[in-house]
Image 1 (cartoon, rainbow, N blue to C red):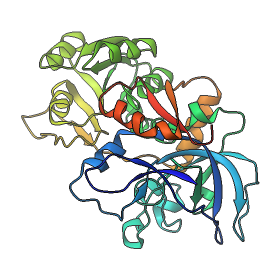
Image 2 (cartoon, helix red, strand yellow; image 1 turned 180 degrees about the horizontal axis):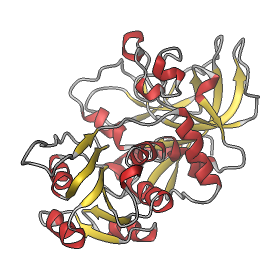
Image 3 (cartoon, rainbow, N blue to C red; image 1 turned 30 degrees about the horizontal axis):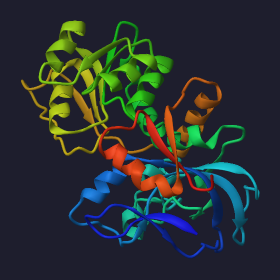
Image 4 (cartoon, helix red, strand yellow; image 1 turned 90 degrees about the vertical axis):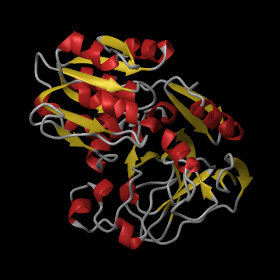
Length: 342
């Protein structure tokens, strides 16, 4: 089968031919219908050292139809359309028992890694899934527009849920970075809260997308961004930073009101300065990771109800390297999705 792999540190991803996978006991083989392209992949490909073996088939957002079942698999049927829950865990620890495999207590110890981030990923014609519990039925949802919800929807949903008690009538929330995750976060904030939503980004094109998906206000993310947000609000109750670079983290901590949340989702290397006299009283900083299996089901239900709409650009499998180039250059408006089987 064809697959898109990161093969050597410092090189671009390549389309290669690899052996077709076969499901072992307890495993499920998917014929991939859609796979998302994410900034996390670019971050991995920029590391001087990678903590897992190469070559690696990329893609941690996956959807497909069930092609074959290993021995003992129950609960899914051949031909069923499913989305893949990406943050695989051991399935037995306290967090996994609660469906929070994103916070599995034993994943590192047992060497369990997500598809595309250690295990073979979804940007291929076929994907091997380790357990049927990591599959969620898609039903009549379009895989191309739904597959980003497995990360670009689930991650902001999980981040926002933790701050819902603070986003009451009269509150304000800031979204920094209105790309793949951020433009979904704006929709979620509008659907789940009465808060005034303010979006920050570095380009007018990205800010226009923020307006289209429901931001009340948009602010250019520059040296004056914090002052401009404070002029609009006097201080906000929650900030969701989907960039996480040092300048955006500094902006995030500079716009908060008393008893606010700073939620750092992006992995741009920024570190928040927090303390007495540095941030307003009772400022809380969180760094959430992905989301739970139950939350993925909830996100897909929001899509089914028409509340969340991911803006996607689609590419064939042979065009995946181009999609990564466009994403790295900031030219993807929303989310890039690969259709490996047409």
